[in-house]
Image (cartoon, rainbow, N blue to C red):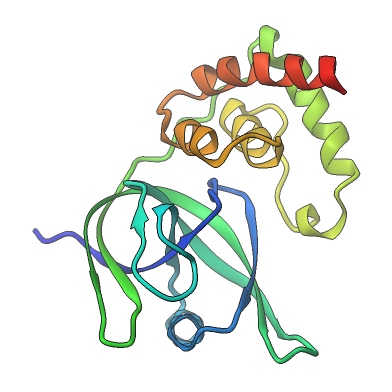
Length: 196
């Protein structure tokens, strides 16, 4: 059985399952991609750029990415298309090609979602911290369903929100274990609280 082929959007950001992704779109290849996604009711893959640029030429990307589903869009006063997407499941990229219009397509294997796991006692303060942070963030997270009792959900939200380097965010996305992700975030949060 051949692997599914999806449109790819290489970005200088990491999208996590369940997280929001606001985009401003101006390149014709991505305007076409968004149009096709909206008409067909399907998503696109977001992958972190390791080398290259978001706009223009080819980019070398991470092997693990996240599917994005468009949940809202609007035309800005500047003429750019504003899109809000939400992260869905993760995938492993097995191969990629570039269409004539410059759009990247990838052959992917969809990864199983993490099993819901209650927050361990040692991670309870991370869930409380996240609850405080999200209450201050405003509209971007209003439409996101909250689950402060789920280790995966809490870990994904902290990983996307904390000011850590993109390669570190990518490593957290690639972890297969929700508790290991929270364990990795504990010293990061402790360090930020010391410095703050």
